[in-house]
Length: 274
Image 1: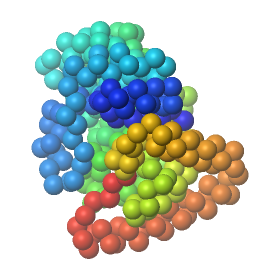
Image 2: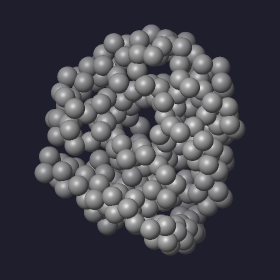
Image 3: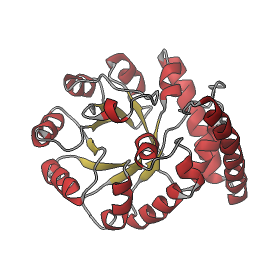
Image 4: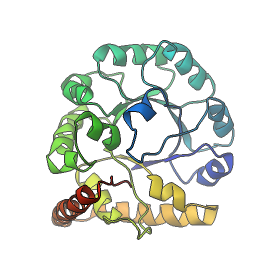
């Protein structure tokens, strides 16, 4: 599983170089705060200058950049992030094939193309997207998708089968895909065991993982990062090399725990994040 850490700190990027597969710079801001108001979500303060700053310290790890959704300056934004070293460019919050075509044409084979599936419209387009050869990978974002679908929590899309249906389509593309985030396995403050979430990602064949907020908040130095990543990768190997019975049992435990947690969250009117 290719693991990505959202970070614009050169020191942290240096720690991660060669340990993680990717560092992500998150430039998305257009419309994000407005649609996520009151959702207790992470809003990046990364800047375009972070792209070259982080690229300069990476020797082995690739640099991924999430740009803004399509807007009037998208072509120049894509040019700038690629010219400053982006190996992968991600398009968020798209709703039409025309937006995807524009994005692909602007990238123009200069970097890998990644799509963030986080709108109802994008979900409805999956049957067509998987036949576009120029797309290199997909990721399903639970936060904005839950808002777009009108769900009360990010887990509703797991409970009602939306995620599994999306992934059954993505599998036909034979391209890498992932969904949601990866929580720190040593963080005991999470109300749902992150190993169950990780197990579900493995069960569904995910080969891309984003380290979540709980992970970022825990890392303070290279030693801690090494420990956390080694723990995570060891468990990924165990789950991937284990039997399907274990994955199915973990799936049932996850669904049970989610139902319990959702009942509590709805009473408290709180979201759940990893």
